[in-house]
Image (cartoon, rainbow, N blue to C red; front, side, top):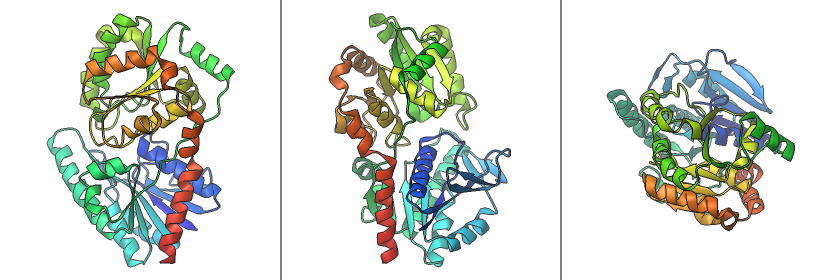
Length: 384
């Protein structure tokens, strides 16, 4: 089967949406499908055409950007060419260009599956507000022309203002989650590299330093945690400098950390896959204090659970489902630093209570399982 996957940002960009698409593309290639990813050349140093893990990546240079969106005048022409070559089109949203790619595919009688990963909620400001409004309209135009909309949980589907309008088109498929193998020596090397002492209790957070991630609530919770567990330390994995569209948020958060928490908070940046696996192994708890529907699931929760690490997550639609489904952690009210501190302390003191069944979680969210569900959906649409 020839599959065209479209999204605005692909590797080496770092986000949950990108990681989902990358894992799906690789798993489909392993099932002997031909996969092309049509995306942006968001960094001029990237090549226009590249093979990554068997996936053909076609990058389109942007003319300019508006907020986090990229304007790519040549994309419609390239999209037309690659749609003609494909059997089916899978677009990962939010993606501004999805609205016309969907209808180009419809003109060429190619089925379109939209993978709706989350609502788009940009920071405040005139430009962001206009971008939000345009994106919402584009999403609805794409939805009208699509055959199926894939979501990660029924919980999110029922609560998203977007997906609940298209319930007759929605199908739920588990997201793909995998971790690189890691051994005890690699974990020991990770501890040494980042000076992690044996007596320290590690609170992990894996995310971009972005408004929707609710980093400030962990910052506010940490002093209360330190009163009870003075050896607690936060390891923050992911982009934290020059995050697109989040400059003002960083200006607000960084001084809070620098003033009183610097000795208990370490930014590790983007880690290679082997170190990511070691990171989850050393954490006593992973925290996901997200605050709005831009967070629809949180793949890092499953990565932590596969590693045997429990999670404290916000009570958001979709985000709460991994903990509710596995019992591996606690759910806390949104934007409540006191409740977050209490739950983190409980989990760190009673880790064994929240261990769950990591092997079962790994099987449920294996990329091969996700790819199989997509493959069955694609075949069904093609047979129509």
